[in-house]
Amino acid sequence: MVALVNTPSAATRTTVRIWDLPTRVFHWVLAASVIGSLVSGTVGGKAMVAHFWFGYIALGLLAFRLVWGFAGGRWSRFASFVHPPAALLRYLRGERRDGEHLDAGHSPLGAGSVFAMLAVLIVQVGTGLIADDEISERGPLNKYVSGATAVVATAWHKNYGRWIVLALVVLHVGAIAFYRLRHRRDLVGPMWHGDKSLGADVPASRDDARTRTLALVLALAAAAGVAWVMRQGG
Image: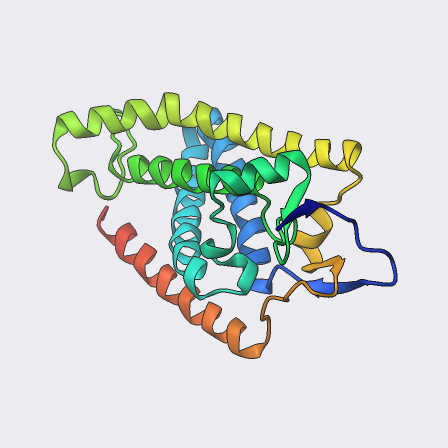
């Protein structure tokens, strides 16, 4: 059954934990590392030391998020925001099916943005690890690829990839502003404190000591993996 979306009244709304703490920490630290990487890469020179560190931080965060997409809280799992085209069309028309919570976590539009950002960042970090500017900077995994592959990776990392990342960041910020101004929906607050005011039938994400301990273990494993990658450049 498909029905028009009805906004829950104040009496039927409740505070629901949507974003667990590990997801929130991931989001803000990744945002900082991406911005830092873009700025330091543009400045160049001695700032490239910071550029590499921002890249390593992003690598660890992305590795963590890929696993957390299967082990995290309900709305942080990829399965919760993989929407079929029909769901996207219903969302754009302001319709929904019974039991469908398209605005709880990532909406169908937001999900596309998240997957695009993750994919582009993975490629950008990956090309940086094997890049070689033939002057002074070389990725720690460069020795494992051919010279031709390194040239292609370097060109992508310094040009196309960089501009695509910047474009996605601008679109992301623009979408947040649009939802705030046009629909009076705050997307920043919930990613800070974790909660949304939603209908009482919306299931919450698990966010307790057990899940946070699991996240810590995964984060430490990701950090160990990054440390191994860094040693390859020695």
